[in-house]
Structures are given as structure tokens and as C-alpha cells.
Amino acid sequence: MTPARPRLETHALAEQNVPRYTSYPTAPHFTKDVGPDTYAAWLEERLGAPPVDAPLSLYLHVPFCRELCLYCGCHTKAIRQQAPLDAYAESLAAEAALVGERLGPRPISHLHWGGGTPSILNGRNLARIVADLDAAFDLTAMREHAIELDPRHLDPALVRVLAGLGVNRASLGVQDFSPSVQEAIGRIQSYEQVARAAAMLREAGIASLNFDLMYGLPRQSVDDVRRSAEQAARLAPQRIALFGYAHVPWFRAQQRLIDTATLAGPAERLRQAGAAREVLLAAGYRAIGFDHFAMPGDDLARAVQAGALRRNFQGYTSDGAEILIGLGASAIGRLPQGFVQNAPDVGGYQRAIAQGRLATVRGVAFTLDDRVRGRIIEALMCDFTVDPQAIAAQFGVNDSFAAERAALAPLAEQGLVSVAGGRVAVTEAGRPFVRLAAAAFDAYLDQGGKRHSVAV
Ligand code: SF4
Image (cartoon, rainbow, N blue to C red):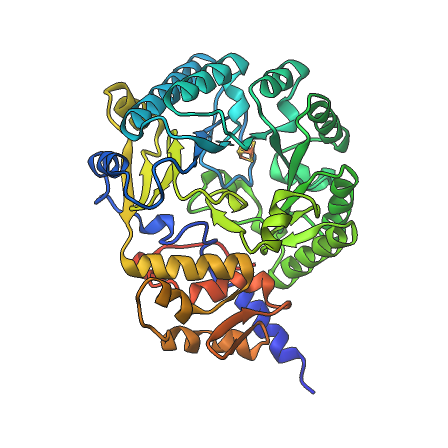
């Protein structure tokens, strides 16, 4: 018996750099070939599928925070003054009108505020933007109105405004409750602060809560992760997302301040993720995909049961809308024709909108191959099993994916994937490695020397 060799190889697999597959093709492969004119034409085409009255989703990106956390991988910057925030709110409202003019008053099913810290705009601006969205689109059938919140910057007046605007889901950044880890990531927030925020939201009727937890943070141990998961579960949010810290200092400058000597290696990261998973499953949560957990009655858990789980830029979702409109600097949208991304710099974004132009700077028009592979990858990420040939056939394509199956061999040898009768299935042990299985179907991988975060 030589158990050491497979373990080492598994850890080597965990260290491989692969995308998170919140889209396919992934954002690094968007190009300048898609600009504002293409986006306008796509919006105006209103292609046959999906039907023009099918509900769509809106994502609003607010790239500002009061201060920057060292571990942050989001597109955001620190800001103190109110005037630029008011101006940004103005731009969001104007962009909604620009898109609405081209698309018509389509019904919206899901509205998601992300960032950054969207509530930094203040209650008055949030209300103004929702009123403008209401004028540009049809919000009467909205099923979910969600916002990402910072528990350190929440007060009863803001919570009342959010509830009044119809917000019914809130996501709180928690990461880890250990003071030593919090010091290392430059974000101090006590358990009591998070508990108070959760109570405030629930009292106002915003009952669906999500907590974001992390593993792989500087100075973090398995015990820290386990304790934080226990404390989070005690507050009983409907959902918990468990993200591995992605150390990408070439992409996020403030991460250079993190001492790499305090970061866990792949074996330890696997143990940390496993410990959190164990705690959350024991607390009654269901595992959703590879990094989310939900209470049995939650929409995500129901979507898994119904085989309707989807994956988009916010991660796993029960939102089945085929059109996602992204508003704000760096926001990404998805249309039946392809992906579009707004100017990432706030100045460039605001200049375009002020001139009455859409702010698209990059994107990708789907090829037939993109559609087939995108569906295969999404099925793997959501369901952990896929029949690639059958999916290709749904698109009228005949492909046995022989090269992709061969690329899965190292994972199969480790017992992380099984390939039988045309079906690819990720095993229970392989779930943390699902991004690697998905990568076997990624025709763009390694093109252009793009760098990604580690697989686990
Ligand atoms: S982690 Fe959240 S609060 Fe911290 S800088 Fe990033 S977006 Fe802002």
C-alpha cells in the first residue's frame, strides 16, 4: 500500500490555476470586438429566444467601499466623499434609461446590487435608482431583490429604506470571526456586530440572509474555519457561501500587503474547506454546487432538487432568466447573443453614459461551440454530472469529446471523476475539484497567458 502518492497528486491538482466558471467563455477572453454599437444592436434585435416578455435579471455594480479589505478580489475602491457617489448614482439611473429605451419595458424577475458596498450610495440614492429602474423596466413581478451589505456599516434607518424598496434578500460579508485572522485581512468585525446586523434585517422583514465565509485566509487554521462556520450556522442564515481566498496580487494590488508566509498550502486549504463543509452539513444545510450551502426550504436547495440550479456572475443561482443586464462600471451582462462588459474605470464609464452612449468596452459573441461548451461546463458545475455528447446533440452538433475525456484521465485516476457510457460524473471526493473537470471542456484555457486562482 502506498497511499502517500495519490494524496500528493491530489494536492498538486488543488494547486492548478483554473477559472471559477461563472461564465463561459470566461471574462479574460472577452475582446474589444464587442463595443457599444454591438450591444445596442443586440438589445434592439430582441431575438426570438427567449420570448420578448420573458422576465430578465438586473445586476447593478457599485465599485466603492469605505475602506479596502486586504483580501478583497472585487472591483472596488475606497471613497470618503459623498459627491462622487451621488454622481455615480446619477450615471446608474441614466444607464438604466439608455438600456430600457432599446429593450422596451421588460419585466424584471431578479434585481441584485453588488460591489463594493452598494449601500454606500445612501438610502436616498438607492430609492432614486429604483424609481428610475421602475420607469425603464417593469418591476411589478420582481421575485428577488437582493443586496450585498457590510455588517460594519448598517443602521436601522438604512435597513428601513431597504425594506421599503422591497429588498428581500441580503448578503453579509463575514469571512472569519477569529480576531487574529481579521487583523491579518484588515477587516475587524465582531460576532456581535454580525448578529446585530442579522437581527436588524430580520426585524425589518428582510428574512432571507446569506453569509459569505472564507477559507485559505492569512493566519487562518482549520479550527478557525470550523469555529467560524459553527458561529455562522448559529445565526441561521438561509444560505452560506464558502469561498477559498484567491491570492492574485498581480490582479489586486492591496493583496501585496498580505504576508504569503501566513497563507495555507493546498493540503491545509482542502482540510479547511472540508472542516467547514462538515460543520454546515451537520447543522442541517444542504451542499449547493462546490461552494454554497442552503437550508432545505431555500430556493437554491429547491433548484438543486428540481435540476434547475444555474451559475452566473454571482455564483450559484435559482435565477433561470436568459438575459442579465449589467449596469455600472465593470458590470457584465449576458444576452442570447453573447456577453458584454462595461468600462471598468469609473471615469470612462461615467463619460460614456453622460454622452448618452452605452459604456460597453469588451465582450464576446457566442459561437456555436461556445454555447455547447458553456452548457456542458454549467451542467458540470451545477449538477456534477453531464453527458457532453447529448448536450452537443441538443445544439445539432455531433462531437464525442474524445480529447476532453482523455484530459480527464488524471482526475479519473485519482477517483475524482468517472467517465462511463458517455457520461462524465464528478465523484463525492471530486466535488472540490469540479473546476478542473470543467476546465477539460474549456477551449480557451491557456490562450493568451491568462492567470487564474488555484482550483481549491
Ligand atoms: S471585501 Fe467587501 S467591503 Fe471589503 S473592500 Fe472588498 S467589496 Fe469592499
